[in-house]
Image (tube, rainbow, N blue to C red; front, top):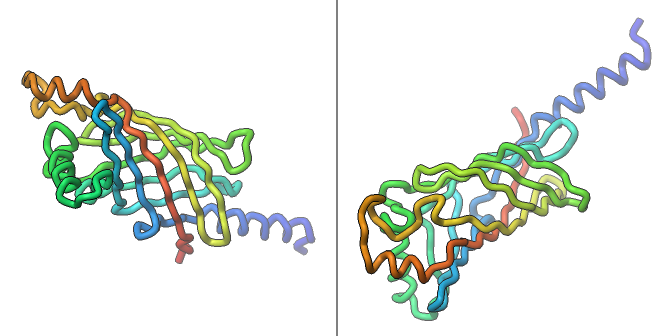
Amino acid sequence: MINKTTIILFLTTLQLAAYAQQTYQLDPKKSKILWNTRNTVGGHNGYLLFNTGNLNYSPAGQPAGGYFSMDMNSIRSTDHAVAAENQKVDKELRKPGFFDIEKYPQATMDIRQIAATDKANTYKVTGDLTIKGITNPIDFLAIITKKGNTIIAKAEVEIHRLKWKIDLQPEPKAWDLVSAVKDKMIADEIVISLNLVFNNIPEK
């Protein structure tokens, strides 16, 4: 005869297994990356959209990892009041010296670990960011909150543009005096603000 303890253990196992299968899918329409560069002549800011993304939860009910694909063709600057001026910046961003978007139409973020901190809903995120085919590790703090079947994640991180060869030099071995001077006018850090919304996708 199956005793009460066995039944409880069986039901608990089923519950944990079901929870382990939970995947939260990024909502691209509600999620956005805001970026900001600063230089001696004012800097630029704008946004970038996602192709896809997901956030996985562990059996213990904690965020554990994920993967994101960013649509580099969607990058836009928004700091000018005149649309034509923003379009000039957008054109520059597409060039090989910046993001070389024709050759690298997407960037990716592979989250390897999400660790809880001593602050409620605050986690240390560690992963690999790939831009222009170059992968570097990054880590940052994120506030992740769960409301029903929706997850909201917000974070701010600085990346060093030279690690991904965002250096105004079209060819690594070429020397362009004008580009070099312009490069010195731009701060090495790009400030990225993440505003992400995820929805639960039940396993079938």
